[in-house]
Image (cartoon, rainbow, N blue to C red; front, top):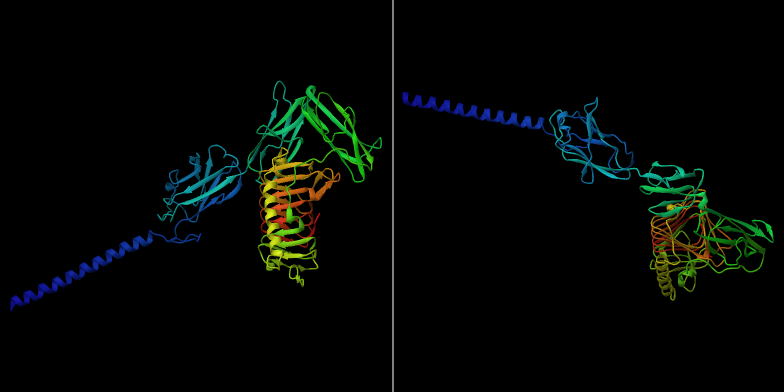
Length: 541
């Protein structure tokens, strides 16, 4: 019996012992789990400090910021106090490409905020990338969930220099500095005694002969103001005469100004309506118009005009591509024409391959023939690809002709093009007949005028690799008898005319053409996508 009791007592003790072991194991695991919870965090976008929320950071400048000052002190603000020992160059960096930007990483009075001051100013118009590694810790020993990577771009810079600098400084330039991308800026050149300003140049190419040069910022710009000793500078003065007396009634001229001795000078006369040009006299005697000569002395020239009579001189400018069947339309598109407000179009309009449903806002009334429709908003007919024959075939031909005309006009190289005039901002300029080419967009500022001056048969082709933007109340006007039908604007992206804009010429656009309220176009709108109109007027020339 004693053995049995002894055996019973030992079994109870063993059972109790095993229970304690299980309890101890449970308490241990619970402690470990609690420790993990207290020292972990979850991914959360909430920026306030809450226990259990991961550290997050906000940068100054923000991600994708542009036009950042080159002397910018970089700011980093966390949502929770940080463990300062982890805020170091191993965990926080700024790079330009693969090159590390050196600088000083400093705390502020707030343990949530730190700054990075570059050792030297940042480079202009340059993209930088910053990184905050997830290895940084807050005071609760919580890590960030993932690396924070952001980038920004500094504002572009204008750098100016003077040529020549020796044996004496030839002039003074102002306007250098850092400016926002896309802003309009003006640089100025003033000749010192004994010199005359000749032109601004970039990469060795002349970009303007205006001492007060206005252009649009597009990346860094390095300009040279070129001057010449007065001993080597020659002047051209052209005075319009009408019927033997000084007068601007008969016409206008181009070519007056200062030129380096021995350089080529081109002078041109533009007769006003009902007048004719009869020839140049005085120091230059010729009826050739335009006339080019090598200048070797100061010259005074009379540009003589008379009432009526033929204009002397032949047409100037590039050979315009044929519009073919597209010439029969004021508005022709591939994908649609829409209007709101009181729009008036003089001439036919058409869409193809889009159907008539792509012509909206016109209130179309189908003609009995089924070949076209009418609307009070169009002084002409409306055509669509789903109308009765021969309309679909005619539209297919017209669209093909439009595309061919665009390609031909965009590939013209004769005469030698004027490249990059005004750096894309042509506000206030007077454009003689010719071929013009921009690798950027072209802008006409609000309330400014661009003048195309030439004879009735002169031509212009303007090749634009970006958008054409004609701002509110801007004008493209004609002078000297120039005609809108002889002007082609070749636009590689979009053509956008603002409120009350007044425009002359045919637009061949690769994409959208849009006219805002009150815009008036004397020309054709030929788009390879769509045309949108808001209370606009289009007159086929």
